[in-house]
Image 1 (cartoon, helix red, strand yellow):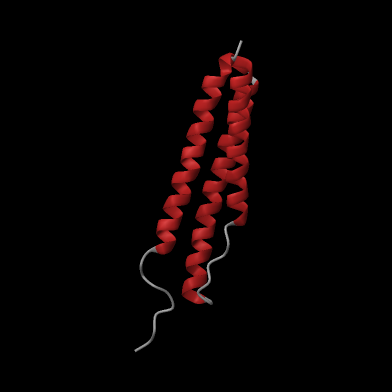
Image 2 (cartoon, rainbow, N blue to C red):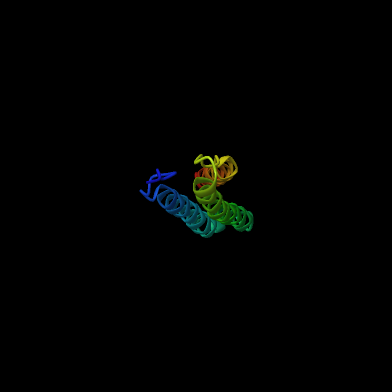
Length: 111
């Protein structure tokens, strides 16, 4: 009887779903933020929203690629999953961009 290389507890699947959920939430926040900020800061809000949505889409795609690599590594290799450093940095940058847009909304919206 052979010992399994990794636990069948669906950890990679849960991680993929959480990355997808986070990326979709940030993309939704970017789209809604662009619409809300349009009256206050003009067309710049659409550019900010587009950048945030693009970064979130990139993180979504990186999560899918990371999932495939992690499962392949766990099945065929050492059992260690790769670190998601690029996706983490991308989503952190998107959140920071949303925060700056919200700050601009507050600064311009106050009398």
